[in-house]
Structure formats: structure tokens, C-alpha cells
Image (cartoon, one colour):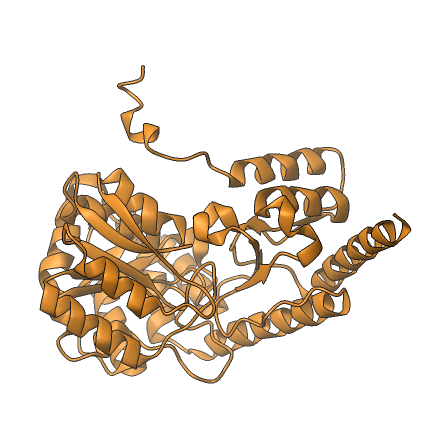
Length: 398
């Protein structure tokens, strides 16, 4: 049995499982849980996208196997998006592949390019697939701290120059879970370093359209020469509220795109064709829905940050993503993020993701997802305020 579970043996305990089990138990007891734990969009996709899906479903010829690299129209639409948004020219035949969400693409690219024992550089904390996709492929992870006030480039450079030389480096901006952003100058330095050392860059821009400061996040492919060593993943999950549809993309270096496409050809037949047709309509159709979704997350961020501040919990406002990365309140820091999030769920009815679940560097933080409406967020902050106030009263009494 141990041999059969070899791939699972190298994984750490899934810390989110404890909080998830507690949420399920609370709901079975009829308790109200305000769930800010998982980054699962709560809104519907744009109406014209759903309409296109419905129309396409009535075509009897679209219900067979699709194509693992994506239908031509969708790859062309994604290339059009890169041209409009980033000013980047992509060949839809050789520089774009459609994935079953960015998560699947990231994991399968690792299978394509990483050999057992290879070193991969990734930030810590990070979205779990950025680390575990490499571990599943047999890589050794070389982690680099990321967070407010940390010089990420200096850490990446030190890790990339260390022997043995890494196979690739993973970057993610706007970042999950930290919500940090970067600029084109950072990418320019990273591309120059990677080209010098001959190291592949894997970039994830799943939250490129969820930003609040008026400065659209850049793509690494905007840097001249980036296509020589970089591939970039994106997703329609957050941009168009299409998380369950599982549509993402990899774009950039033709050799890396071809490697991913080849792996996929052995493993899947691509997304259901009507979903790909509807995704094409999303990219080619009206884009005002993106601004509306962006504004919704900004409004929710403001409600959460202001409510936590009134509760006495000082949390920095995120400039992007659908998350707030909150340092634990000082009086609860000794608990650690997992125990604090369990305490928050039990005593305040609010679920958050413990920072430790995103890597050792996430300890001391909790991640809130902005997936409840403003009324529910206000209720969450009132519950938290009562909890913090009760704790303060108990301390003063003692």
C-alpha cells in the first residue's frame, strides 16, 4: 500500500482540511458561517456568455470530444486579449494553449519540464499548486520569502545563482495569498537574470484584471526577449466569474507551450466544446463586466478593511486580487494562524484561510476572500469586533 501512495507521501498535512471539517460540522448544526475561506467567486458569469453557452448546447455536433490544446477560435481570442491588454503579439498556433483552468496547466507543465531531483524556485507563501505541482513532478523546492517590506528580487537572484542551478522559477503577480503587486521593471530584471542563467520563468497572472489602484498589472511577456524563457498562465475564473467552467491559458515560449500541449494530449481532451465557444464570446464580447466585477471586489475590500479597523484590527488594504492578507491581531499571534482561524470560526462564525496553509512564510497571517456581499461582510466584522472586545475585557479583568 505504501508504494501505491508514493506521490502522496511527500505532501505535508493539508491544513485547510481541519477548518473545512469544522465549517461542515457547524453548518450541520444549523449555525450561520460567513465563509471567507476559499477564493470561489460568488457572482454569475456575464449574461451574454451564458447565452452563448446555451445556444451552443443545442448544436448536436458539439457534444463529442474536443481538442486538448483548445479550439482555434479560443486560442485566437486569447491572443487578441494579450494584444489589447498588454500590447503583446502571440501566435495562437504556436504560443497559446488552452488549459482546464490555470491550476491544471501549472501542474502539467511541471510534469513536462521538471525531472526528478531538479530544483525549482518559488515564493513562500504561495498558491499551493505553485509549490506542490513541482513536488508532484519530483522537484526539490527552493523557497524564497515574499511579503511586505521583503526584497523579493534579491531573494530570487540569490536562489537562482545557487547551485545546483534551478530548472525554473515561479512568480505570481498579483499574488495569492499576499495580494502583492509588481511592476514591469521587476519583470525586466527577472527576465535579464533568467536569460543570463538559462532558467525558465513560469508566471501566473490569474488576477491581472482584479486591481484597485488604477494601475493595470503588467505581463512578463511585455518584456523584450521574455518569450525566449517564459511562459505565462492566466484564467477566466476570476475575470469573468467562470471558476467552475475551468478555462485557463498558457502563453509565451513556443517550446514550453508545445511541451504542455503534448502532455495534455495524453491526459485530456480539453474543455467541453460549448464551454470553449462561450469563453471565446467572453473574450471577444463586451468587457464592461470586468470593470463591474473589479468594482465589486473593491467595495467589499473597503467594507472589510474599515470594519476590521473599527474592531481594532489594523489590516493593510490590498491593491489587487480578491483577498485581504491580514496579520494576526497582536493578542492572538501566539496561537498561530491555524488555531486562530479555528478560534475565529468557533467564536465569531467567520471562516478564513490560515496563512500556514500557503507555506511556512504564511504563518502569522490569515487570508480573507472577498466572496460575500457587503452586508455579510459587515456582519462578519461585527462578529469579530465582539470577539476582540470580549477578549480585551477578559484581559483587563484578569
